[in-house]
Image (cartoon, rainbow, N blue to C red; front, side, top):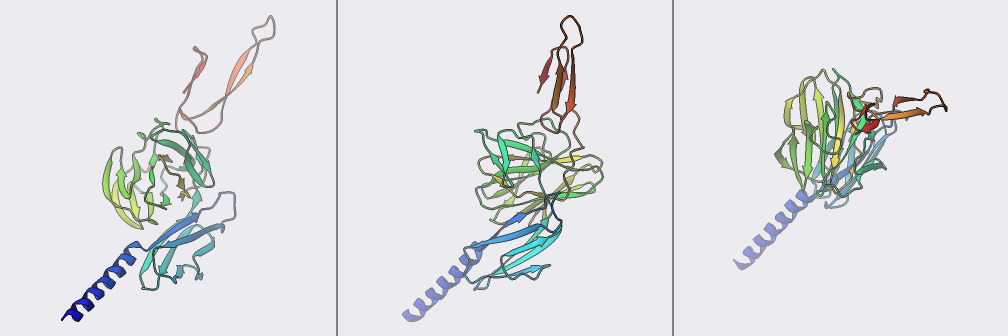
Length: 297
């Protein structure tokens, strides 16, 4: 009887160990999206696998790679299947698009495909040049590399808060292993696992938040307006954000420009001085007040 009890305990411990192994098995992708000026087959996906039982096997669709890297990718969707020795399996779908071209930094900077907080603010935002034009469908996507990520990623149809997040009405909020919808205010949607793929998309008049390809929240969004992508990062970088819409610097929100002044001073004895302004690109909301003679931001 005692031997049977010990055997049962050992079997139970083994089963619990297998369940734990399956629960901790993660595959975190680094997704290199395309630069609009680069070749259309320069994308890549590389997987970092952790907490499973080696050896691991890899398969991709489409693709013939049997390693953790799939390269030479054009825009499109790619599915990875990773299996360990138990075997347990992790499957993810990734979209290859174009790099988010971050500008309009406020307490953040962009380097090595990452938006990095640089100031001691609670939120450090930036906005993209990439514009989802009126009437077009499109998406933005990011992989969560760890559970300490803390960011808001969303679309805005007007720029009113360059240093905050109040002008984001269609977004996803990730913090401390949890995901929330962000429609001006936030609502809890569920838990996050390392390696989860989150995308936000406009399809017609529907805005969706997707987690690993499944819709977890929807709301109504206007199809007839231009949208830009904005992010707010807290203590951790936001890396490798991809979008389906290419860089378009010709579209600005009203009043969302930077002025470069050209000043011609007066010739002695003449009133021939002048000031002319040239719009550079999207940065902070600004207006020129010739009466005050100052640039108001």
